[in-house]
Length: 355
Image (cartoon, rainbow, N blue to C red; front, side, top):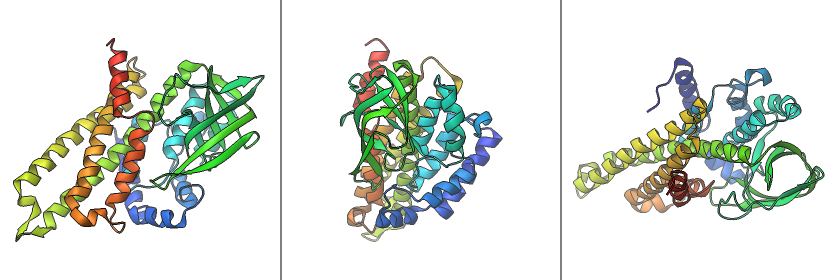
């Protein structure tokens, strides 16, 4: 478990309180019913931005707080607990690409607007159903980018895209040469197919930058997965302590105690792996790629287990739309796949270690 400083502790507690009071699961349920094209509540996003959350990985010189990726992870975990619909993960990953990129003009133009919450940014990388950075067909010719990205989180509302081409990362702003096609996914969030046709593009860096940014995006997803898993476990644990069957409280049955104990230990390992990856990014370590793949593999397996057990241990009520369990397993399955599933990252981790 990471050792937090006073600022990080205050940030975590502040966002936890805001999430519990202003964006509980009932808020997500209302958002799902309203079905806004953006896939989130703009007012809630503005409130988070006013708290400084949107600029958490952006340098102070550009209006951010520069708290780093561990701090970002703490925020995403607290939002993930309540399934808060927010473009924070996608926007932060895209902002990191601009921060790490070679274009000073892009930094000056876009980072202050992202930090204030005025503009939502996102990554457009994958071109198929499975994350494969080796199969990027998007090309840039004479400063014009063309290609199709299959599953772009927050693609319906993004004002600026950080796009992976075959030779590196590019920035595409606005809607010139950009066509958005909504994808309706099981988690009721924004996942658009984006087609670029001779869109004006500004170069940010080579394919090495693409890999660094994807690792940061993956680590951010892992933090949200941790929040989902923790809350799914706690909700199930509370239910077992109150539900009575055969004249006994469910938590007194030893078989169920064993299942909860297994999930608890897996959650502790998951937290260690996820926070380790976030700390590796902040420290600029040379093994960030390995730490991220370890985190995603562990997070994928653990969230899959806990979200499934949440439904099974709640019994029939867990299968109904009136209960929150379904929301957790639907979001879990999307996040497990995003930026590569557990099998993909186990193979990547092995390859990075020479196997």
